[in-house]
Length: 403
Ligand code: DNO
Image 1 (spheres, rainbow, N blue to C red):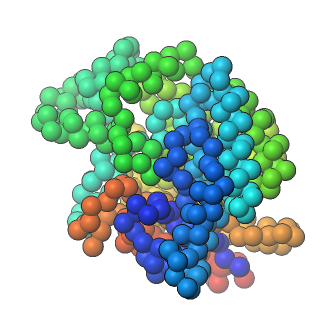
Image 2 (tube, helix red, strand yellow):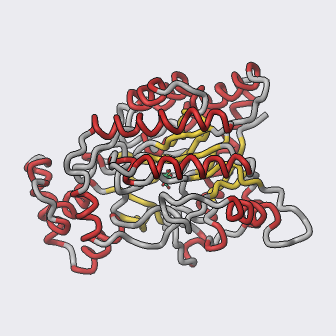
């Protein structure tokens, strides 16, 4: 067997078509009803309609051969993350959505527990030497935004003096257009949406977390899992939490899914096959202490979904998204460990299904550069290159080493 090759698709609004997905060689579509506001129940009819679109590409007489079997993401309402008094209502809605998904035969659900922001980058068009564009996180630019654009109260006390000086110099050297762009990049909204958070909305969202520290956020995550996982279990749903991206605290917001210890904690507190992990190499790798291949060896049995992406670490916590096989992640070692985990499952599980993985992000390259890409990182050709390289790597490992 081989890993299940999947592709994130954003629905009818995605300039990458279902035919493109097929030509890239993926069989599984990773999708979500992005148009439904976070917290609301996904109606069965809407799920079925999307399934039909994916499987039949709008009424053609031939099936596409694609299947929507992974949801990324059913997002968690901020009330649940904050532990507000109305969280039980949102947890009930969340469970209802899970019920509907299972009734439609969709059993793998990715989500995250990052307060306010999802993944965060400062540059969405970082020029690589070969002319392609990548996403980048520049630690100095982030501090410049925090201190001089957002002007978050008390922020200057959180950074070492030399970083503050560098951030000031950077900010002073930027034009007002560059400052606006930095703000838009950092506040780019949730994946699959085209709206950007306004600065006041962002300030208010941060204020709502003023009294929530790591411990409290952890408690709120465990509270959520204790309610949701037992039901997910009866529904046959495999929940898989996505790590924080990047895996450290931003803007004073706590983050609790950043390290191996965090992942071990949340999976052991609520021990169930339904309480699993989306293993995202690109999200975890900016922290050099995260031993990725080791994580696969130690926690691999909990993985229900894998995102393979590379990053190149730079100074002071900055990084850019490098080619899939090139960068700070030893993709060979990671892939080998994943293939071993997959083989273990094949040998021991009666209802074995392979582990789904997707090439997470890709450069904007070749014809991608001529397109306007509404979803940064989700280009057709860049991801196709990633998928092709990863597929080859897997095949090579299976054929040569793990006979
Ligand atoms: C970035 C993605 C994340 C991921 C969510 C999962 O491109 O990997 O945005 O979808 O964090 O909930």
